[in-house]
Image (cartoon, rainbow over all chains, first blue to last red; front, side, top):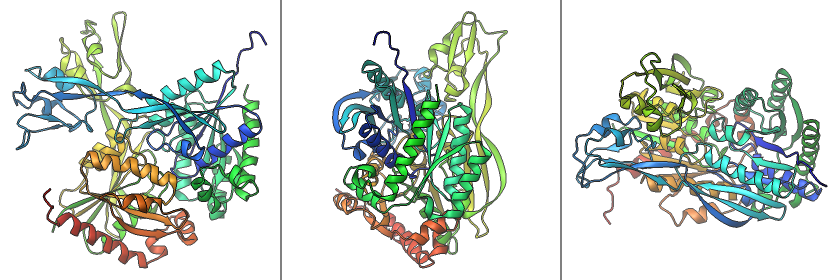
Length: 307
Length: 291
């Protein structure tokens, strides 16, 4: 097949609210896509709480360091203790001298990396240092290749690490003519979510019924609409609160969005998680597995419809 | 009476941070002055349960550079200075990219011609009020499509009342810089987890932060019974004790769905949260053992 341009599609799984079941549903979609011979490359974009590798029995592959930010360091030998650095720092990241330290000191965890202190210091006692913010990995699962990362605790989650692993996943997919990338997204609506959904052909929102679930679903919908990313919604734990589930249908209707299906609350889910297996593999006859399979069919139809 | 700040965080999303934080506040306010700060500005939820009457509102701002184009010589010093590529030189013009700006003020300070001024740019909203039960309530909400929650969290903290005895911070999920901004000035971190592999993995991330900032903390295992014992086994080898276990109950889930406080669904928990607070207070006032 000469000159066959790969039409690579990206599916991102988001929610707004944390804990709705993104990773569990994503793991099942990964299993189904592999089982049905629809090859895909997988990305875990929830880099500060990365669980997809656990859910898909990933064998951690080669690791690569990631450096996204830098921090300031004050040379205690040169510091003249004028305090100008502390006056100029807007991030409360500089501590005054005390009994243990006779010079001003930078709190690395709070340092924003802006270097304002470097430029203001009359003694040139401050310098910037690159720091490693995390690691990313190219790993193998029984279902295909996974690109994932671990942000070091407290590090800046600016979306750069998400963008890095997505880029590598995309390169791998293009090199191997794999037409689909499935991305497990983070909670919230900020930078990492925006990076995870950039370029997505479809966002599957895993919602849960209830006042919190509804409130945050509305916020992620507005965010994705701002960035013109097509949306499909599924309702997880749908039977826990039927009235609240109805509110999700209403919200979808108000925004002209489709509900791809309802997944019932299933006490077997944690057991599947403990076995490091997607529920569709652990217990394919369970109500939640059947429901997720149905959602997967809707996702495939939506992806096909997007040319 | 001592002043204490308790942050409620988790690592994994959806473990019950907001549930615990709101119930803790509600149980304590009958006995002590309490203020509640919802630091999960991307997706704040606590107001749905504590139902505050919000009486003050102000924008959350970042100071971004505004360049006097008539006097700018396009020397490009500001572009060099900016660590975040929020300024760029195009011919004889300097462009500002507001969403990349961290508001550090460095370009303004270092412009040789002194032609940069700072203007406020709103990235969200902050509100203050009181609940019917008397909790001082502070919350923030990031504007849709804005990338950075951390500047709002910092500004929320400046709205706190200094003399209130107990402050409770409801943290965002995860273990990144927004969580650090929430926890760094807390006296104690209450970590909420679930007894599953995801819960354990993300709890370890959160503990990683606590170790870096040398904070005391303790753990509440929520939805106890749904998974396995590995969280407890892991914690037994750390300095972070299990302070409470909340067994999974369907009534809790369905009550939360309609905006009920868990302590209204099962009132016996009121005393448990009061007791939890007393134990945290005692831990903090115990003399430290010298190594």
